Every structure is written in structure tokens, then in C-alpha cells.
Image (cartoon, rainbow, N blue to C red; front, side, top):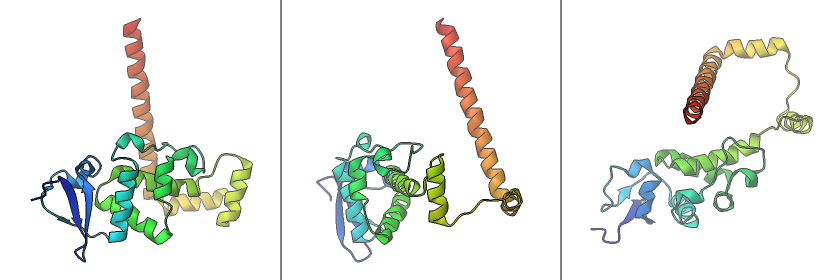
Length: 188
């Protein structure tokens, strides 16, 4: 019996990492699990310790984890809270494992923080300097209309899905605007 009401995660090599019971608020995987039993997980001890530090540095409070969506530029400090940045400054290999663990645990805020860091690394602002920097960094040249059409043709299902998602988002946005206008008219 776990009388302290902590989550006990057991690694493959039987090491135990304790988390506060509030972890349930972060990880959908835990919703139907019994807190009284150690939970065997396919996550390394080193990764679990990073996740624990991430939770502790934010005092197990969702509101302390601040992520700009969409990101506003390529500066991580402008898009993610300082505590998350400090915890997630990891080697590429460990970072990849933490990101994978966030999916495994259904730990949405940790996943979003990791993805924010990745997105900042590849973000290209809509100005000539940033575009030129990205071209040099990724070895990109000008794309001709023929090359663009060829890419679209080769990846047609992807582009169709993106187009569908765009139209759905646009429709949702229009519906929200219309609803706000109706509410505003009712107030007047």
C-alpha cells in the first residue's frame, strides 16, 4: 500500500522514481491506473528524473508551464517559460527520449514544451534576413514553380490533408467570429 499517495514508476531495471499524486493532472495515461501500485514503465531512469524535475520546477502546476502558440519567433525565451527551458536543455539523445516519453505517458504539456523548442530551432521569420539565414543553414536555393508543382504532385495526399485542415480551421474561425457577432448583437 502506497500510504504517501505518490506515483511510483518502476523502470525496466526495477529502479523506482516517485512523483507527487498531482502527476495525474498532467498524464492522461494515469487516469485509469491505481496509485497504490508501482507502475512499470518502459522509460529510462535518466528520462524519468528529467520528467520529475520538470514537474517539480513547476510545482506540479499546469499554469506555471507557459507556451506561446503559435510561436512568435525563433527565440526560445520568447516562447517558453524559463523553468522549462532550464530543464529541457539536454543532449539531443536525452531530449529525444524525453519527447518520446511525453507521448508514452500522454504528458501533453511536456510534449508541447519539447515541440516548442524544436519549432524555435527551425522557425523562419517572414523577413529577408531570416529567410537568407535559413537558406544558408539548410542549403536551400530558390524553388522554381516547376519544382514546387513536382513536390505537390509527389506528396499529393499530404497537401490535400493540409488543405483540408486549413479549410476546417478557417471554417471554425469564421463560426467563432459569427457567434461573437451574434452575441454582440444580442447585447446591443
